[in-house]
Image (cartoon, rainbow, N blue to C red; front, top):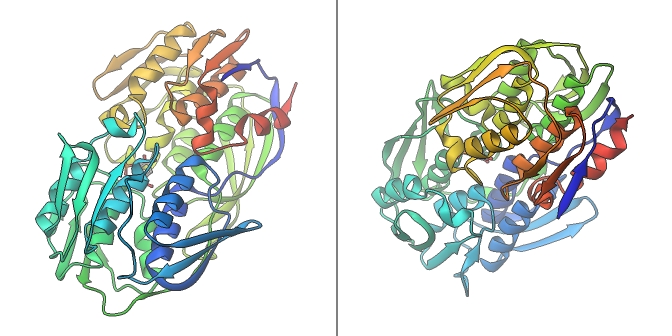
Length: 429
Ligand code: S3P
């Protein structure tokens, strides 16, 4: 599907964004292996969560929807059933990697696959430690499909070779079942939703500096729990940037997750001069929440993003690259090679689309160098079948001259089914 985006004068109004995708995946998975009925409110509505829910249904878990709530009938730690066919994780790396951690510990064989994009993504990072724990996993040279022969696992000490919350969470889930200590050492902090949720369920997870440690197997089932899901900051990010870049904008966002392992994007934008207020900060169910107010400003400054700052804004980097074209000075993004193995090669996709809009930039193996400010002109762009590229360039279209046409715009549905409608509703001129 093609979508035409016209320049906007400013954004005004109040917005509620979909539930956090990362927390939603975890709420479904943890509820599935808990004992009894868990209720999730505000589950992320995108296709990625449909994939996780369908995989869990194929493993025998009853999941039903009632209004804005999702009910999960947890089968207990040992209650999952062998699936009849291949489990389809669709476009979702989180679904595949976290499920693999659970499946590695089950006394049956399962096959996990996904769409064309997911079948290109690296799985060696989970295969190696899960194999050390005792699982047998066959893959297509480190890529899906995965054939997982699960069984009894043993705890290991493992230093994460990539800063990945998906990998960390995969090993924590396997660690619930493993005999002895599972110790995970992170060299850079990544999103800590799994840790917070396990602690909320009473799992004695020890956290000291950069080391997580867990003793298994758990003696008792996890309890059922209610999971209110905060609004997804990574979805809010598109609107925050649009409002920040269009002077005169005044945008309010309600109930946004502001977990500090996710707010690197807000820190970076504020550093660039954006006016963003966090209001009514609270922590109702183990995850920090706030309302946000964003006002447009006439000019932003360039920034350097590198090192341990990267994981806290990894999903927002395509959008920050769009911001960089409008900032005074040269923005440098380094240490972000992980972007090449997301739903698409996001460094290449951003560079191609920005160049089509007339911008000059340098693409490096692990980042981008973007001088600014540079005017963007409307162009024909591709989503590269990636939700975040589609949405980042819809925002670029708002600040460009002339019309921007995005092909494959419907990929936004992966995380934000109402994205374009919400954007139109908030546009004021
Ligand atoms: C996610 C972690 C990140 C992020 C992805 C969701 C998660 O991936 O890019 O969108 O839910 O754990 P990595 O952990 O692989 O960097």
